[in-house]
Length: 181
Image 1 (cartoon, rainbow, N blue to C red):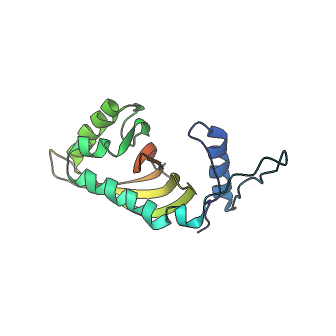
Image 2 (tube, rainbow, N blue to C red):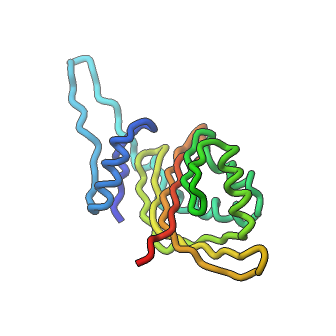
Image 3 (spheres, one colour):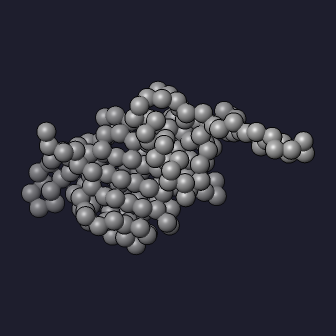
């Protein structure tokens, strides 16, 4: 798996994120832009070192933490894993959730189905020491609360994580059922 460890971006740089996603889809590796000296007095800022970057295993563990929170059945525990300004595009709702109240509301209803997630494909891109993207496919086993019948929903997902005040939070989560076909 190729790493995007030397890409730096800001939360507001949608262009950089689109570029990373496009490069990931092509299987290309991106490198940080070269810093050029503009005067004798200026010095380029150091790029992040490999030691400062989270590992792909550390980012992968964020999904396990999220899935374990689902197993508690407590929507507030799940919502606590999201930043206050996070965006959730959920699997089984047409409503975009953009705050803690909306995210908690979504999970209150979703957790009634006792979901249990399992990733079947995961592609992790470490962007810098404070941000990473995990995207792929997961299966959710759901239990109908009325009939106790189980069903499996296969969906694509993207989790964007940012480390804020020393804590990894979900800042963007998109999940959509795979199209039939």
